[in-house]
Amino acid sequence: MTENRHEVATLAGGCFWCLDAAFRLLKGVTKVESGYAGGIRPNPTYEQVCTGATGHAEVAQVTFDPSVITYRDLLDVFFTIHDPTQLNRQGADVGTQYRSAVFPHNEEQRAEAERAIKELEATRAWDAPIVTTIEPMKAFYPAETYHQDYYARNPRQSYCQAVIAPKIAKLRKMHFERLAV
Image 1 (cartoon, rainbow, N blue to C red):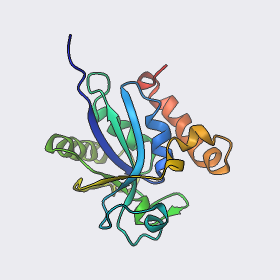
Image 2: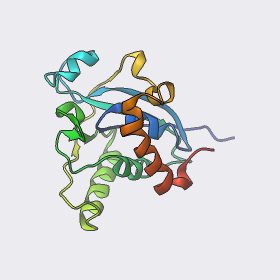
Image 3: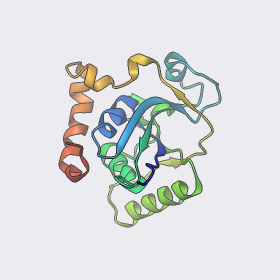
């Protein structure tokens, strides 16, 4: 019997509620946690991160089984469900806390993120240059409990309907084969 080996990916692509909702739907994802990474303040609160002064981005930290879904698969989904050409924003969410960023946990993840971005640029997958940064993964701070699995708990909330639901629809259309039953 083989031992299940899990890996972790940390990604920032706007509001963490969107990423959290999407990654929870994928085969091979065993855990998703909304939180903060990339900043200077230890243990920041949501209110502190919202000011933009801490340097943190809202992120989803995804634990996954690479024998079922690869890191590259996660990156492909990531680059589908947010706009990596918007600097420090996603739609109406504006500020450095909403930046597009990859926080690799090792050199292999860093190299894979660099490859993914180069391939997207080479194929002109987006009409504008990709501004996604690759930043060192120094620390992850879980967000407050009410942010976890937000979409599933609040599907009728207006932000969920207007912003998250269309991203989930796009995920279902573009990555149907990666969805859990």
